[in-house]
Amino acid sequence: MQIHTLGLEDFYEDEYSLIGIHSALEDYRLAYLLNKNLDTRFAKSNKDLEFKKNKNKLSFSIFNFLHKKYDFEWFLIANSFKKENKTTANELLLTTETKSYLIPEKKKVDYFIKISGEIAPHYVLNIVQKIKNIEQVITSYTIDKNTLKSKDFLIF
Image 1: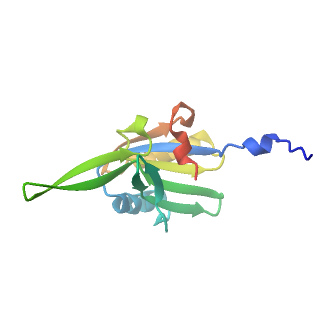
Image 2: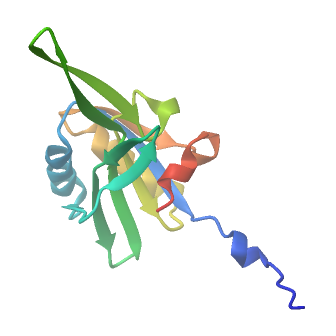
């Protein structure tokens, strides 16, 4: 009988920094402003982040950027997904909207920036400050990923 042992590398947790952004901007507009102010090159990902929850398909938009000089991969992720539900009542077509969140405990956050890799805290704080200086952004701040119950949704 063959025995398989697990080493610490089998439980490797992806190292990343997380920034929360509050803004009413559309995702593509925010990506444009981040590119302009952070010297990044966010581009729409080929695939959205998709989940199935209660027989419903949820899809969260993602923009990504690979910083080749420092070997960091950046992701701009929408925190909410809106789905229109159409119903017919008395020959009237009614629509309702349901909103789902990627990280439900952070419902007020509109977007997350996930930066993969080990990054110095002062570098992340500098990025947060530059994002705050964008006129259309209400605020931005770092988020401790260890306090999130739903952090598994950020592993992709």
